[in-house]
Length: 122
Image 1 (cartoon, one colour):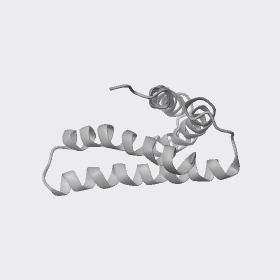
Image 2 (cartoon, helix red, strand yellow):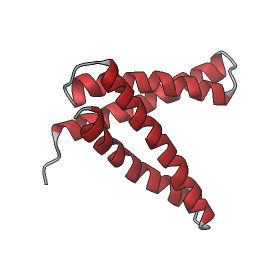
Image 3 (cartoon, helix red, strand yellow):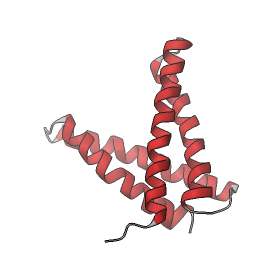
Image 4 (cartoon, rainbow, N blue to C red):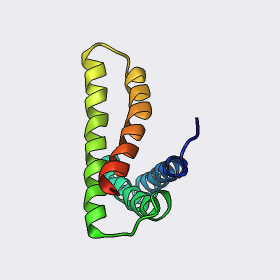
């Protein structure tokens, strides 16, 4: 089975965005003494902006536009809600939080990619 170039690039951008999120959050919490929830909110915004630009130009080889930005943010927010929903459902069913994390990290990125491929960059 051949994995498409856009999938591989999407994975690299996702991993990089995650590292950016962690670095910004830690920097704001440890260096600037921000509350963790505020620092993580700011880190999400920075990482999401990076992700939008990198995925638009590199993963999907598209042009940056307000229309694709709105669509990108929509898919990102739906993915965030899906992450919370999966975690909540697993906990409500009495499952381990580890199962919730495993489901989130296996399902959400794949669905996120499909959402961007079929909606953001259609």
